[in-house]
Every structure is written in C-alpha cells, then in structure tokens.
Length: 123
Image (cartoon, rainbow, N blue to C red; front, top):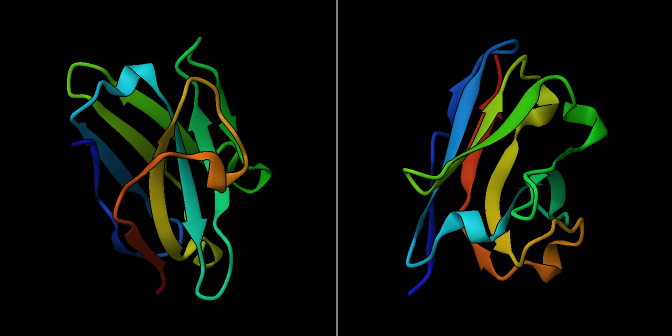
C-alpha cells in the first residue's frame, strides 16, 4: 500500500522556522512529483510548492518565494518543506501529495496524500 506520512508541524512565533517532512512508504518518492498544499477551514487547497521527478524542477507560490525551500532526500525516501520567516498568514493545515512525473497546480490531479499537518504562526 502507498502512504505519505507527514511530520514537523507545530506552533512557531512570527519570523521563526519549521521544517515539514513527507515520508513515503510503498513506493519510491523519486519517481513522483511531490507537491505541498495548504488549506484553511472552508477553503480549497492551495499550492505552495512542488518538485518534479523528471528534472527536479521546483515551483513556489509567489507568497512563499525566497522563504520556503522544497527538497528531497532519496536515501530516506522523504520530501521536505523548509519554511523560514514565517508569518501569521502562513497558518494553515499543510499537505504533501504525489502525482505522476510533473507538477500540477490543480490539487485534484494528485493521487496520494499525506494526513495533513497543522502549522500555526502566532506570538
């Protein structure tokens, strides 16, 4: 069975950092594009970042460029989202998801999802 298990969320003060992890089991992460999405209550999931499996290209939402970094550790079969200079508006539930080879902005195209991880930025 294919699973994505997330960890690393929590409470952080404005300006602080968190690193989200997304560990895959049952499949090799490197063969898939992995995206990170955020979701606020009552709203649709919104793309934050993605890394493709074809050439390792990375994509970021304008709101997080320069502050968030997506990376992959193939030896650990794990994807990471390093979030720096966090702001209260970054508070949301964050999900990782896997799809084919290339990244899509449309979350409905992703096949496998992590369980979600709450990130709260507050003083």
